[in-house]
Length: 273
Image 1 (cartoon, rainbow, N blue to C red):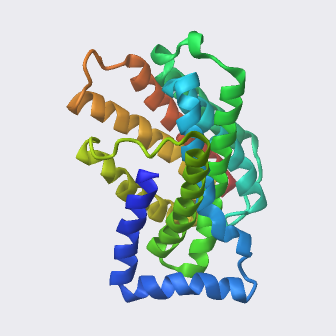
Image 2 (spheres, one colour):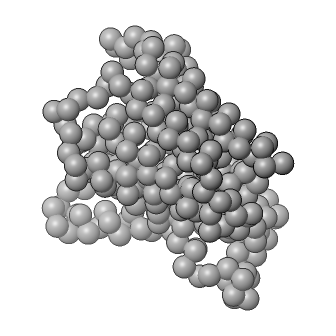
Image 3 (cartoon, one colour):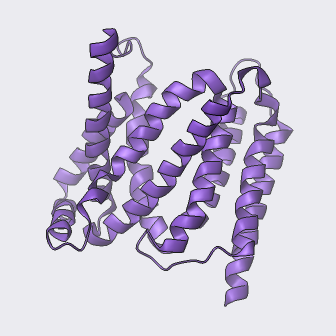
């Protein structure tokens, strides 16, 4: 809720301050009115918000490592099908043997990178299933954002639409929880200042991914984003390690495997040419 709310404020300032972004936001609804863009796709941000909500409930049960692996497996798997049907609005890509191999290598890479953080005491089949399901939502969201971006032509306008629908959805969920439990939003006042940067980073990520997926497809973007996530984890462990944290060789091996998956997929594209 905090991430989406602060992100919405950040992206609104960006869109309002630049005319081309304001025009781009309006073009989205023009496309809907002309029936070029289905109205239901305007709710792409709900998928991202649903992922956040699911993460909040599943991580305490399954742990961060298992949730990460399961959700990324879901993202990778759905990417194959999303690219096959051309949901992103770009060129369709058949589910080839090499693309499947690249996806499998990436999932294995994530498993290896988190191997030393797994705990079978928190293993839950139901939680893993929900994490995989949440991952598929992210894959579909990326495709829908790319298609919306075709009409907005401005990635920040696309990002704003995501944060509007996502924030409204999370607000409804929070209100329902409040009515049922009486629990207010977490103690925001005592939270570290950097917590509020998450929304701004999310805005930039959505804006970048909406444009990138248009050109490279959901699977390729997912492969690179997984690699980037693992490299980012390594950098954090090097620059600002938490107490008791050592540089994991599992993480390094996972990074190498991830880019092996990228190479495998790239070889597939090269061979088709």
